[in-house]
Image (tube, rainbow, N blue to C red; front, side):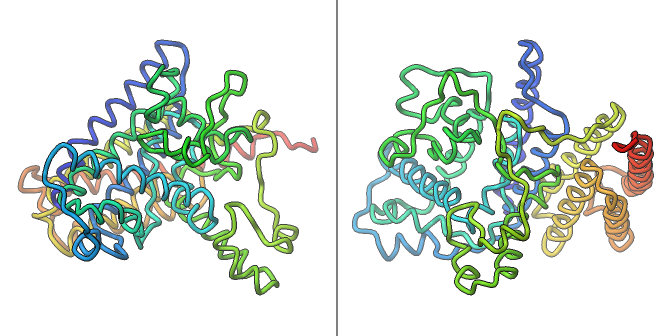
Length: 424
């Protein structure tokens, strides 16, 4: 936990710098691919994913160490080749898991968050899941285990492999010559994130593109088919926690509602998007039919609201940085109490961004939870030792945040009522 938190303390500022640099570059070039609330939602998704990982809220079905101890046929000595084999093994495993996530109903729930943005930029790379509680990824590392690649090497290479997938989530880099034949480039990944029929479910590679070419899932970006981004069943919310579970909830409802007993069981491993006929007819789900003629999800907000949203995100990032930097000192159960607050903060914050009429309730719950922590601990996890009177400032923030939530929701209601009726 502590080590990963320290790594994230270094990685977070670097990722955020690149996100804002891309925004600046797009503005300078007159090609903006960045919408404020969409980017904030993406960053909030990254925050929830990082918090879940730091807290270790998932169980590995079979540990890699166990597989090495039981399956290793040889043991490659420490060298450049050992690390290269580990990297390639991770990439093959990543390709296989990625493809399964796209092609089977149940597994799509773990990946829907990553594709939920209707923009394609560096911020959307931060949209990562929190819905996986049982990890089966290590099963696909059997080739590395057979070669005796130590678990310590996998532990070192895995974060590098993950972070190396960030840079190609951009529209500002064109095709890259001969590199297109070797590695995943922005062009390849634009295809992967597109919902055009020519591009759907293609280019699953994470670092190397040759897996797609070998396993018949490659598609080049076509000059006359501009990619359109998102998912065919739009999520219509900025709340990343909701997005993480909405496909699973749809599957549960469909399995319950269908009268066909066979469909109740097979729905989980049918191709992604499949629904029982009786349920699909009675409970239709909105789906994009023409990718060139749909309106992107948005909530029309004032500059004041946009500014407040960025302030909220800044406060959240500061709280997260303190959390990651002091995990050992906070200890157990404190880290889980703190983690719960982070999740509640994101939920309340993004519900307000989505202008959900119930957002005020979640804001009150967040404030009560935060004030409760300060009341019972007489401190915010030891922060008064370095920043005196922080608890009073934080209580003031809760009052301000709750008041502004009511204000923004009231303004939204007034705006809705002032709209002319379509029957007028």
